[in-house]
Every structure is written in C-alpha cells, then in structure tokens.
Length: 343
Image (tube, rainbow, N blue to C red; front, side, top):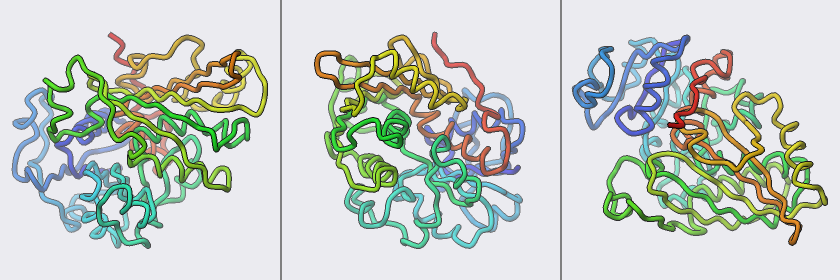
C-alpha cells in the first residue's frame, strides 16, 4: 500500500518515516512539507540512512493522485491539519490525522484549542482511532482521528474499569507527566534546555486540550457526562508518558484480584501489558506498548491505575501505523514489533 507523509520534518513525521520505512507492506511514495519544499530529507537530517527519497514537495491533491497514494498521514500541528483536510474531503484514499483537528466537535475544539474548527460535517467523517476499544468502527472508516498522547495513556488505563462499571466515573483524578517531545519541535521558553533540564514543571493544569477528548470517551462509555481532574507536567526526558489515575471502586477487591482482572481484560491485545512490578517509562520507550498496573490503597479503599506509553509511538506515530494496519486489513502488529529501547 502506497503512503504519503504530510509534515514529515516534525518529530512525529520523522518517527512515522522510521516506522513506515521498515514496514513490510507500506511503501513511502511521497514526503510533503510546505515549509521545506524542494529540500532533501538526507541533507536536513544527516542521521538518516543512505536510502534516498525524492525531494520534499508542497502539498497538492494532484500529486497524491500522480504518486498513486492510498493513505495519507497528516503529521501536522492542530490548526494546520485543517487546511489539508478541507482539500482532501473529496479525495478517495485513507486519511489518518495525528493532530487534534478531527477529535472534537466544533464548539469543544474552539474552546479548548483556541483555534478555528474544521467544518462539522468533515469532523463527523472521522472515527476515533483507539484500536483496542474502537477496532470495528476503524475497519470501515476512511478518515481516522489519531488520539492524543495523554488521552491514549489515560483511556487505555480507564477503559476496562469504566466500561465494566467497576469505578465511580465522577471521581477520577489524573496526574500525567510527559517528555519534552510532547510539546512539539517548535522551541518555547518552557522547552528551552536551560529551563527544562534538571527541572519538573507543571503546565496547563485542568486546562489541557486532551481533557475534553478523555471526557468525550467517558461520555460515550457511561452515557453521562463526568468532568475529570487532570494535571500535567513536563519531565526533563525526551519521550514517554506516565499517567497516574486515582479512582473510587464500587467493589472491594484486593490488589492481586484487580491486576488479575485487568490482565484478563487485555489478554488478546498485543500491545497492552499488565505488569506486576512498578511501571517505568523506559520499559516502553521506542515501542508501541502500553504498560499498565493497578494498586490498592487498603487505608482509603481507592485504586490507583498507572499507564505508561511512548508519546511518540503509542501516543502518536506507532498508533497511526497500528490504525493503518487495521484499515488495510494487515496484521495489526505489522511493522510495530520493536523491543523497547531500555538502555
């Protein structure tokens, strides 16, 4: 299957290129970047191997047709994807958008992203691409809204508990930490080395744009609206997310029983691993895995769910390839069997 990456020079675009290049069934036929059109990827990024790609091109639907592209990956920022999606609305191929532009209804998007939303009819064309919990809908779709990194980590942890009515959905408190690549390639004061090195910094507390994405899924799963408490912080590492969710269970079960139950819930999912040891970000970096575990506080009765992912892989490019595998009918693990880079 022939694919094109739009926005290939960003962090997520480079990660997509790395994964797709090694995929047995996807062929990269075009790399697009409006800001760097005419330049060579090998010259821009000397660390790349000797494989030679055609020069970066500006976006055009005509070029997608000329290259016989079957699937487009939009690795462009929120607010930027919109302009490409509007031009792709009559294109017949598959589209996977890694930005937030297709994840939320117009009113919610505008409020949380502070950007002009895409047309509501176009947004409604998209299916939310969390394969473990929306696989059948993805299979019959042509446009996929790739989930946000925080939302992926949180929802994979919460989904079994919420869908099986094991916890009170109105009592969810989340603390999530991310590596600096989650903030994107554009340099800011908070991602400057002098500010971020040897520092841990809170940001967007209860204001992060992934909050409505998480609440939207909870609404779909429970049938009622439940706001969450969500605090986020930047870690002085390149990649990885740890989400810690404190919840109030309806059942009084031991920690071992909760872990056994969660293991059963994800028994058939190739990328979800329920661990019996304390989770750490390094155990998933460079892979498409999500590691989960559960703790029981015997004093309060509360349960703590911990989820770790690589924000560049399962939180972005890896999940996009996983979604592409589902769309194309390929083995879902195809091109995604890399071991984590622990050392």
